[in-house]
Image (tube, rainbow, N blue to C red; front, side, top):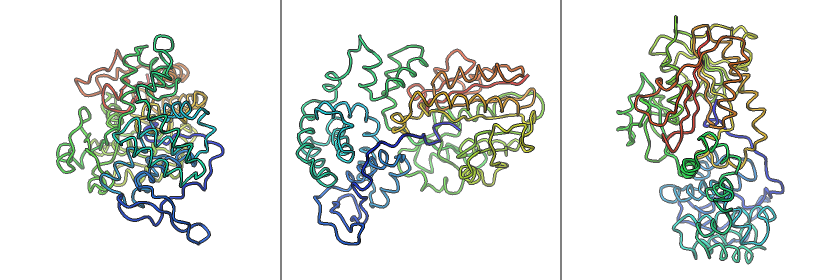
Length: 501
């Protein structure tokens, strides 16, 4: 499966104080109530602490969980909002602070380093997260400077009481310039080091900026537009399951809008999609429109001969299996969904309940070595390969700071092995769709070229462009397709379709 649906591993920063800033258990319900502390771990009562408004405190705790525990904001923040009783504007403010600070962490760290006169990594981690939160408010929100400074100092007084004077001085220094002023001071000159300039100006690691630029043919203007889009809050996309829901009717039901390209897509204006009746009763699921398009492309690809046996080789957590299973049901086909992780296989079972889908807890590379995965048996095969997830950074902003170039060799080896297994699994005349949620050329073009060359079977590339909706712009010269947030409003999904000769 792709990075748009799979959490990305990362290294835990050293020296993080796990006891700093306990979560606001027992805090008053509603975002207008301040957090004043509570019972400590020994059962006694903590001294009353300085007032910190609840939305900011929840945002701080989410940041701390990400940096201290390798947590993922999209997993921990909703639970924190529910526990704190935040909704409406307060929940939206906490969410904006959390995701905005995570997206801009690299640039904020450079600014804090300059303002503090010491490397940000030398600052005590709880204080460091509070300063990031304060700097984000000063530079990227409409929060008045005095409110951003005073609320952050109150937060530091709670999580690192010996650093309040230091924090006050750093924040006042940061408030002396706007975001553009700090970029002008700290970023390399655009004409001298364009990649370094873009990396600091738009808060992405340089190696990721370089990989985006390479995938875009060296066009730095378009790379800039991609980086800008990466820093925007992405909309929530629903997939109306074929045979169970119609996208137009679903859009009316949920107060959304039909998608621009996928016939199953619905754009949500906001809210919690898990609370929707259509999601709860299996008529729809949350899925980026790009993921819908590549799964539908596999189903649309012409095959010679029978068309009843479909395979999803890396199925967890089941979004694409759910769509393919619904399409298979309409066409009298059956999908085999393979997932190597047991808990993720259970998620696939839940996502495909009631559909003609058989879930196997196996390693997709075992094609030909397990009787349940015979060679030359399947008519259509999807390889939604594990990847760096660079195409979904707008949805998982912490991933850009966790991934490293050293992650690529083991991932690309796994991608080649899975694609080779898929080519063994498909019958002659059948088709394989190779998909990644990354535009990195090593994970896309290099992987597909190497796997097709080494598989030992004659393989032809199918032009993927006609398999996508007519009129989609910016699909390139083929035969593969790369979708982009700034061109298509989707995650940066790559698609190659191969036919076994």
